[in-house]
Image (cartoon, rainbow, N blue to C red; front, top):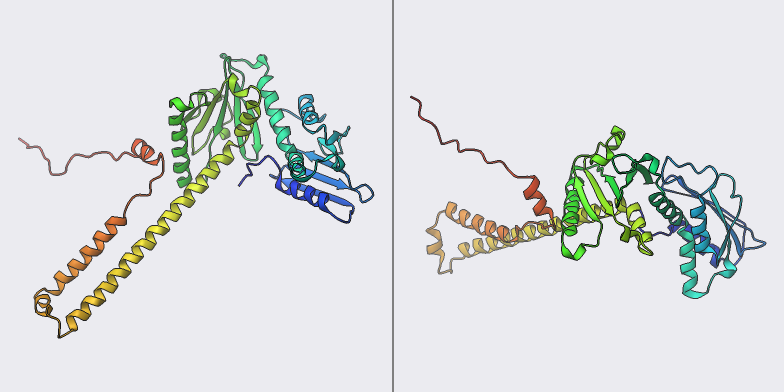
Length: 369
């Protein structure tokens, strides 16, 4: 499961160890994340306060090659965010797109020190977010066709590409959804239906409008066939100008980059909820059956007791009638606990997409002359 936090957990752990080490030693670490992001951490025992951090990350769009390092806008964002604790080393280390010279002597103390290390560990998120913001607002007009730009394919996580299209009054992000299990498709589709319903409510009028379609939207016409074959449909978000103003821009970009991770997290939690409810129902059913067995044993003892006054009345009933009564008692107790596991939005999806057709009765016939 992808991590929603901006900071890299592995990189943060190494930096915390270097910060709290009592006896400095030479350090040389290589880290890999998502199979394509690489970190290199280097420190010397002679000067433990100075740490060199290098990062190699693929471009957010395969159409953009980072041959000469990162774009100027990304470097400006890095300088702005780490000016008080780090300096950019030019040129970067061979095989990497960026190298920072960290000075731990400039880090604040106590809790703010942990926040500063966490901020350093989120370097990859800063680079990717800056690239996406630059692409959104600098799409060339030479690719304009039918009033919109050509779709740009973006890859934040491997094997999970999505598309961004710039239109005259808005930006549109389209996510092809693919799942391994058919049950995951049903759970995710219920989530998409809920997002669409919430977008039409008055409480979420300012949120980006969400649409879901089982077929490719017309904006992706002309894209390769491999990107248009999905089993979960296509989810689209309309990004307006007020969604990318000021501090909202970073939040909007981060949500777009991690939308796939949010959907997977929802599916995983919903499956866990269903399994937990099924186990509880199974335990309740087992308890009902156990109580019925205990009650049956008590009734048999009463029948065998010669001093019981009700023996003659009970003996009048046949064994089949007694068995029917016991089965009906167990069935009634099972019906009390036999309630559906309700998932928000799933009933509406079931009624809309899984309607059982009505067939004419087989008893009807027409008279032949």
